[in-house]
Amino acid sequence: MPRRLIFPILLCLLPTIAFAQALRGPTLAAASSFGQGLPEGLLAKTLETGIDDLRDELFWYRTEDTAGDFVFDDPMTLYPDALEQAGARLSLLVNNGHAGYDDGDTPYSAAAVAGFGRHAAAVVQRFPATRSVEVGNEFNSQMFISGPLKDQDLAARARAYVALLKSVRDQVGAIDPTVRIIGGGVHSIPVAYLKQLVDLGAAEMMDSIALHPYDTPIELIAAQIAVMRRLPGLADMPVEITEFGSESRETASADMVRGYCQMALSGVTRMVWYPLNDRGDGYVPLIDASLTPTAAYDTYAYLRAEFEGARVQDAAPDPFTRACLFDGRKLILWGMPRKLTLLSDAVTLRDTTGAPLETREAMLSEGDPLILTSETPLVEGRDYVLAPQEVIADSYFQFTYPDGFEGAAMDPLSRSMRDRNGTHPLQTMPGQSGPGRPWTPWLGTPENGDLRLLSRVMLPVGSSDWPVEILHAFTAPEAMTLKVDASFDTVAEDGRIDVTLSAANQPVRTWKDANTVPIEDNTLRLSAGETVEIAVSPAAGSDDNLTRYRITLRKAP
Image 1 (cartoon, one colour):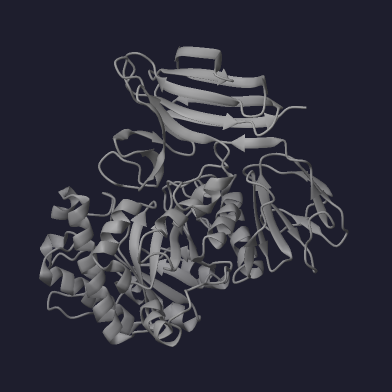
Image 2: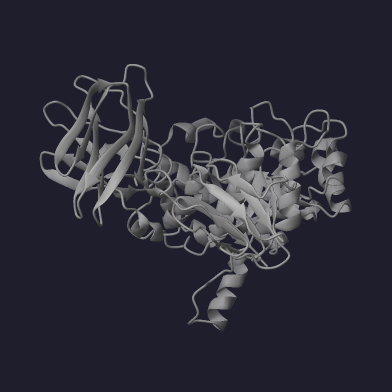
């Protein structure tokens, strides 16, 4: 039963119990394009491989004729019948207009908005395989919007979207109230834009929210969804990642496994791999042009067979390692490099396709997960052991969003900005708060919207008249010797930055007017309470200063 029907019932029956959901491996689906074309043999191959949850379209302009009647009479409007016969499910994506309404542009008039919802309802009525309707495809971007809405601000875009969502909700609900309504339909995790939708009542019109986290590093998925959940109305909203993919054939399987783990820990209920077949846009498909399943499909099938629906818990032993333990017996593990050793013969080490690895030792890496499986519950120290962790702070793995995200307390790197008025902590800023702002949560200050810090890039701003630094600082909890490794590289060839490394309030080294700054194996001795700082500011006369960065601190012997 859809969430919009369940929640009022739950609130009546259990008024004093807060909503809680056991974390489980998300359902896996695929983004197909049968509504655009039917390559010979692809549909049969898809169903043969067991891919039975498809996100696809039946275009409005193909289904409603000039008389206003709905006609389904060609392969691209009849393919859901084959899905029903095979026991597969269709998640209908509705986004495009119709030439008979608003000149075919994204619907905005009352007649077009009503027709948009009527089309969705007609598909639901005709094809029982349609079990959900996703409203809008990256409606917060410019890519899939046309007509007058394209040039309007985000507030107007939000109002137009909510009208379409309501039209679909009302008309589909009148046909079949058990069909799930998926709202949001956004690129990235744009919390400021989503707040506008929530303020317009969108949360009450959807059963789940669709996100496409293309701009989110995989290790930050859980953190950014947690920021989104601070919005009233979205705190307990089921999340569906309806597009997630990889542009690298070498890393697609690893990206899928890492993403699956992070989504499971975020309460994501459904993960849709993009795409099913090659779209010509560089993203790795599950089935290639010769109808051969790819290595990405092998991983997809393995996750479906062994992890889908399994209970999951966060098993990370430290902030520099990511780990998901499914059903107590299957562990996905990756992170900053160190050795893993199996201690029990009952444990099997596998790659991201599920194939056994003929070794009892392996190295963790940041990009390629290891999978440990056992017939009995896995116990660290008894069944496997990790080498001691040398890292004590890392700007990427410990990147957090203050004001609620529980990981903030684990971050020993304070992140702030410093100007002539003093040092000011950076705050969590919502994604897509205005033109030229990141579409994901980021760190900055309300007073200076241009300065920003993300997990892998920073934008220092300022001038010779008013210098501003982005500052990372670590305070030693006890006397220790630190090894500092860091790198700063401006994205633009003509970008220039100044970087200063300090310890115990004394400069250690300064790089002036630099494009690339490597800080390698700098060993610093600190007494308890002393601080090491790395400050970055624009070089004099430099304007284009977007900078890739990474800072890692290790405790030296």
